[in-house]
Image (cartoon, rainbow over all chains, first blue to last red; front, side):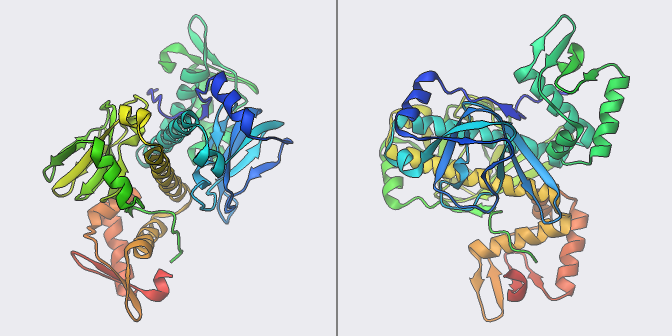
Length: 216
Length: 216
């Protein structure tokens, strides 16, 4: 498996406590239930959100109901920054569990703290690199490589190292993988099956284990 | 043809004269000849650039020499912002003609003007939306639709309206189109040929003309 650490999908932001506290002194907190949309494709809004609790899926859907998942966002990530220029959102933000966010308005950003602005910039840069990597993958790589890159990348950011393997504790279904790499669920199941058979990968409902020689 | 105004490829930034002047008071100007690289894939640098003159191709290349063109940048665009976090560049910036840029360092950004920081943020947001749209196109659309979207989008931003058509003055080769939409030159030539035959498109070396009913 090749190693592509740029293709981060589950990404926690590097925001420190001080910045989070600073944001919380001026921005209201809002709660969402599992399954709720924080914002929808096509929606205009003049706020973005700092995730405080829970996990959120960022995805788009075409007229035929085909879905593309761009990533899963976790606490200390900003989401929805791309609509701050007044344009409609290109993606949906759907709560995968109970979610708490701080609502950061365009006004907060325009008049607010300089340090917060810098972190927002770093956060969009991070997204930008993920999108560039995914677009490179979608242009150059076949579906096997895209699946492998996803598994390896997650292991690089979230993996816990054991003697000869890396364990990644994320609930990763074949359906979700297919919507992340832009392929069919059937094709993804086939690829996962082959990796399983070769002993490189063991996949369970809530985690997966990669042989270290595959992961690195 | 469908209309997808988000997929901007040739994009001038909305930077006003005041901001450009502000940047020029602190940032040095650098010149590049046609064909020179401003930065390369894999390169680390702690500066970004404000384009002042000329046109720059942003692209990546895989080990087999396959190329993906992300876009062409023109004056008043920032380029290279994504490496400001210290990570290696995922793309090449190649001068298509003689180019003049202002070199904006990470330090300039950290300590500099708040308004410049806001424009940088808007600029990365703009890139972000282009990448999201391209990734959506690459995931959902077939090559015909991607070519048509590219032609229509360019006409929406750069087109000059005539009675029954829109004229877009950009040098757009079949090769460049294929590298923008992620397909082969042969396939692109075939698609352009079909559009030509149906009368929807007339394509020359330095411009193309779209029937208005196709463009809107």
